[in-house]
Image 1 (cartoon, helix red, strand yellow):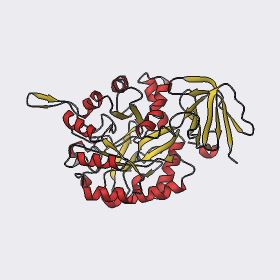
Image 2 (cartoon, rainbow, N blue to C red):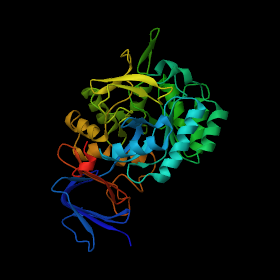
Image 3 (spheres, helix red, strand yellow):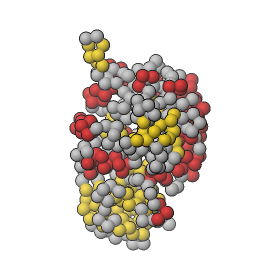
Image 4 (tube, one colour):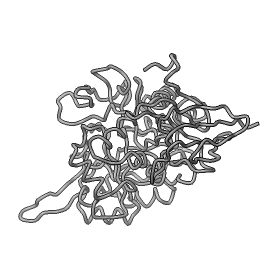
Length: 402
């Protein structure tokens, strides 16, 4: 028989409002009802939210690692441990993300994903892989390894996609590269979201990319062109294009370091909560006290340091991902950008679900959707994480002490 779960005496977060004194009823892996009042569900295990918020689980579209592991390690253990770490901070589903690398390393990560996905039962769910690079602009590489940066290679990417068993959900690339537009159209034909990243494109190039399927921009503002001047003329870049193309969605690393308060406010003011997703871009040092770390796999990765609550290249020429967890993103948007709690939550639940086309199953506490639910307090500290109706993290359990 399906297990029953009742979460009551909490403030239920929806995209439009917060329902006081609400209840969420779960049968098996699915939400049965989310409503005001204390609703009875005979035979259910009951969880008292103690007046805390009851929210949809966070969805992270861009995460590289945590807990001392990186998805580029290419091992099942790495995938499972990263998923467990982020579940402690409210992430109930994610897109494991790669870095610029050789073909074999990418295939190794994809193979590990498939095995780990079948075993994962106590961490954030895997929604598919996010491939970042290697088809990016060299002068916008950021912390990506220049040894492996290259133009789109049809034979290579067709082989990778063919061997992935449909496990690739999105792919980030620079569309202005030779073959970049064809690559976008190819991805769309395979049901994969093309995303603009590490790009030096101008507005005209971005608009052509948008028409070729690139409807999303990866870590907005980071490693991309803004207004540039050639001679006496100025040209809009990827950043301005993201604002000008209304239908374009963006994602931001709202860790309070990558983007200062004014830019967080600007993104929210222009793009809104329904076109902006919050991402961690977290690396292996996340959730650890490490001050030195490796970005990518331990054998071939790039050394990075952690200081000022962010990861940087040792020469401090570039950020090297973040050490943020999902709860921190929500706090940042509320405390620094002045966004309401319900909209800040929307930016890491309903909005990312819509961007990758799973809004029928995830992203809000609606009857019939997956029972991915979290409970957090007024400081957005996670109390409990429930994934598909199963309690996977309880902050009162001493075994889960952070």
